[in-house]
Image (cartoon, rainbow, N blue to C red):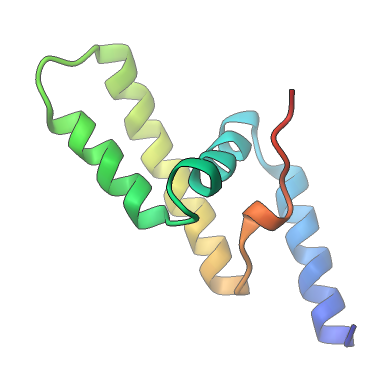
Length: 91
């Protein structure tokens, strides 16, 4: 492993350690339900938000999740990693 690869791996591990339980779950769901695609997950959540009727609490959670996804997706893009490689489903 090169020095820059090791640094990127360390940076990613530190980022993963800082993630909330909700953010970790989004990473797992992206991998398990959406074939690793943030865009498919965002499209699905937005479609649910626009549907009627919906439960307000769920809608509020979706808005929060969309913000979390933006943060996670930005980190993946900037560091050229898949956070799913660093997070396992916790029981």
